[in-house]
Length: 103
Image (cartoon, rainbow, N blue to C red):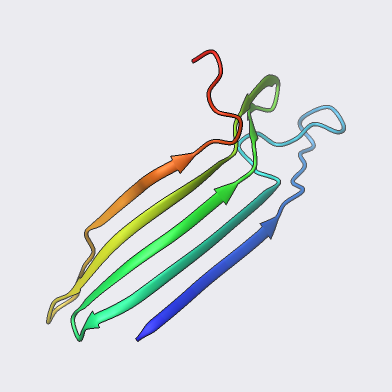
């Protein structure tokens, strides 16, 4: 069995503790995720996900911008008789638009 999960978000967060027009720190304007899950056997499944977000400010009073990224995650799911074991591989690879100039 194959399942797909997806999510898209647009956030325009604000705060009253900063000057008008300030963007909230660590809050991406847009984020997107897509997760695929394929059941190989009754107790074993594989998953592959894409996660993307736009750039964020490091702090509300700081002009430092953390770049946006696209990340690929993978997982192997194994269901036991009692509970579920979920080993996973996070960030199979990641891409930052514009690269990491100067770092």
